[in-house]
View 1 (tube, one colour):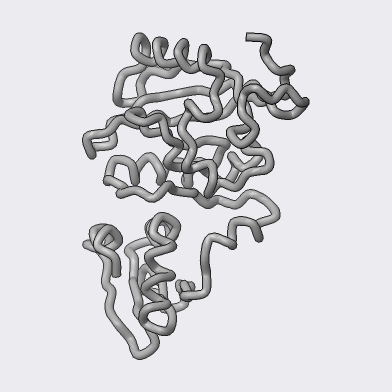
View 2: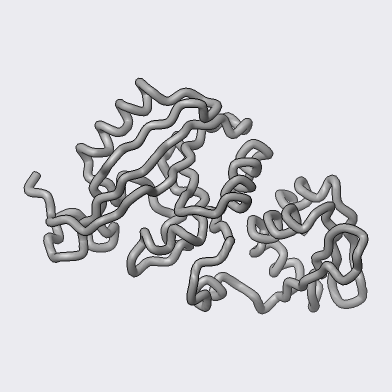
Amino acid sequence: MQTNLLKYLDNCDYGLKPQGAWVRFPSKEYAELVTQIFFNDLTATAQKLGGVVDISWGSNCKNTFQVYGWMNDSQEEAMATPTNNLWFAQMAVSPGLLRLAADLMDNPRKAGIVRVSDERQVIMHDETKILCPDHSLSEATNWKRSQFWHPQDLLDFRQRCRQELTPGGQKMIEFSWRSFDPDLGMEDTRPGNWLEFTTRYRLFDGSDGQFYQLCENMDMQDIPAPTV
């Protein structure tokens, strides 16, 4: 199994079997979360071993599901309605960030997590699909704010964050900002390209040398293309 995945199996039992591998987690919630984060690693492991990775939790052998080598990100397009899944950018996940992700699963909502250093959307809940018209969440977890925010709104937002947000999540700000489709660009004035979002933000320390913003959408509407 991949090194990053093994770091999160310290409290788990795991091993090889004739047709693959198995992992037993302490709880269903932890099993689902780690499987979602490291889904590609698990499918690669199953493919390499020519079989399947059995996922289970607790002491009940009936609590189980399987990850096969043929499974991949195409499952996202097959989902007709939002489910309680998270989509992650390719990145290492610290314990602090894992706790933030667990909160999104425990309290499903149109929310995600942005890394402050490069303003990249690194984690997004399934419910945010509606906020990304014509795009998948696999795409959206590779976007940075500069690729789809109105430049002046982004400058104003950064200033407010520096002045008002502090790590720990105790303080929250609400901010409205204009967005354009990153594939179309901000010069495209056709209807549907520009949207306005109202979002709530809190700041957290990821315990990995990085700070992260928890971003919860409150409203979204079509707007005309700005004149400036």
